[in-house]
Image (cartoon, rainbow, N blue to C red; front, side):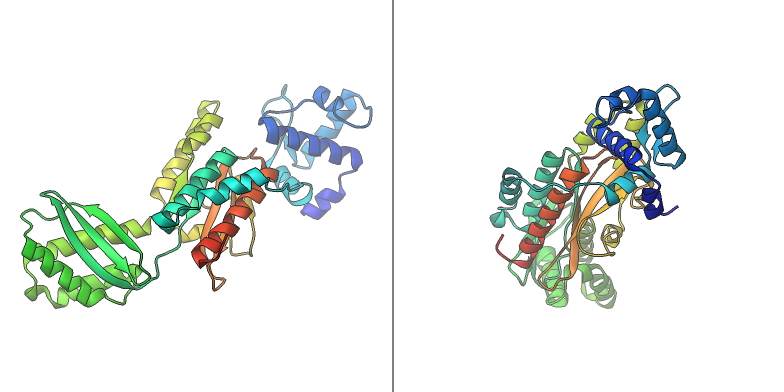
Length: 352
């Protein structure tokens, strides 16, 4: 049965009962009973009449019951119907706008720091776990340098044509010499200048094979170690903040197991383009409820996600909130939407 036909099967009383059950669930996460509803309905009807109405809604697949003596909860299908047809989206308050904007005022620390800070603020405001998919670095490489910090620790520094400077710690080959560091840096600067970070691994692998006889063993080892740590760090573009908020929501062993699986998914996730693919249907916020969420291997969570775009109106990242299915959608949707708008302006270099 389609959503339109489901909605047409609801008379005024059943629609009101359905709305009250869902709103109570979103507020408390708990089942609601007929006696509670009888005190909230505008019309005076008996608890028995409400129970019959709830049974009809259960027959339609919109409500369910955790056990026979409990009240009713909305099913995932019921939540979808509510979100698409009955949800009244609120506005972002002035205080929330200020907090989100201030979290991104980290220009001196770079884009990554601003996105990280915004993700942290998003988890605080929504009491869920925030997900920020950072854009790929597409600026051409200008310069690469190795800096020795200790016998077992070195730094690879990368400067891009847009002036951005980033560095990564890594473990260099044993016996590293200053001459090997200079040779490795000169080699990389000669072959990578003008190319992007995403091209590093392919180009370096090809050029090392071509020039293997010209590079000493230490220089080869340093190049491979430094490039590997840099290339791998740019695969992990997903910033997750507020995991503890999900644990606080967990009240039983089943919930804890669901959260553990979610954490495992977040740690293992490599094909992050899936997060962008979730937003392909169009601009704006999308809501994935329970089993609709194909990004993670569980059905007990909801994801509210929105893409953000660069100056060329190309989707380059996404921002979202994940939490239990009883998320406060009316409040979280506009917060995610506003955060995505600000991130788009940030990556485009536009004033916020």
